[in-house]
Image 1 (tube, rainbow, N blue to C red):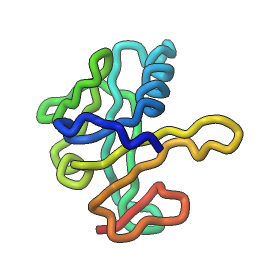
Image 2 (tube, rainbow, N blue to C red; image 1 turned 180 degrees about the horizontal axis):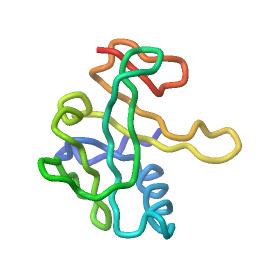
Image 3 (tube, one colour; image 1 turned 135 degrees about the horizontal axis):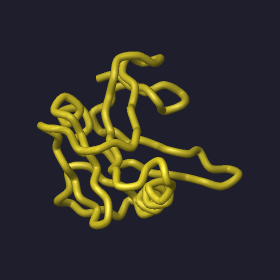
Image 4 (cartoon, helix red, strand yellow; image 1 turned 90 degrees about the vertical axis):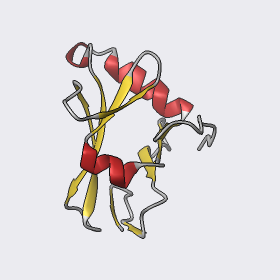
Amino acid sequence: MDATYDEGKLIHLTPSAQAEVRRLLGEADNAGKGLRLGIKGGGCSGLTYVREFDDAREGDTVVSYGDFDVYLDRKSTIYLGGITLDYQGGLQGKGWQFVNPHAANTCGCGESFSL
């Protein structure tokens, strides 16, 4: 994972994650939207990560990546501040990976965590 990121950002997307977001935002269904990151209850460890393309909502924290924005609702901002989101594609890639410094436990697939 490329750990290069802007220290001033609330959340960090690696260059490969940024490229994948741009690619997906280029698809017709996602045009004009941004990436929403969040959490919800569930999964093996208690909380599950949410990734979806959406419009900004009132009260969102907005993190700009130039040509796209990342949105976090108030609750998610508390739990996801300081995370790094990576994307590993290809035949051996693992897809989306969250590196969350607040997580005490994570499940084997990396899709859920607990504090």
